[in-house]
Image 1: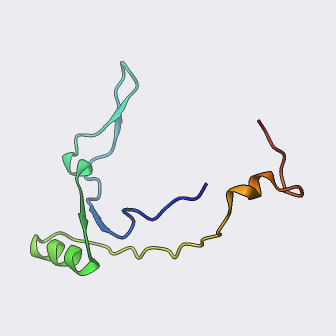
Image 2 (image 1 turned 180 degrees about the vertical axis):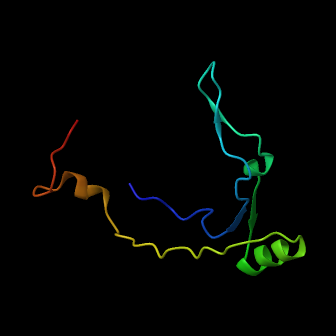
Length: 89
């Protein structure tokens, strides 16, 4: 199976957490009172994201995406005679 690149060409703006997460004692769920942690904004280009952050006085850090290493595979390789690893079903 190969993962595609749909939706991976967008720039994402996420806010840094302002409050730490807390464990709710009865159910054990983790929660936070920080509402900005739920906000994610996507932009088509890096420049649009930077312009939005600067226009709204939001401190930002740009994290460049890592280049992806793609290894083309075919479905028939799963059934190849000398494949590494055993067939498990």
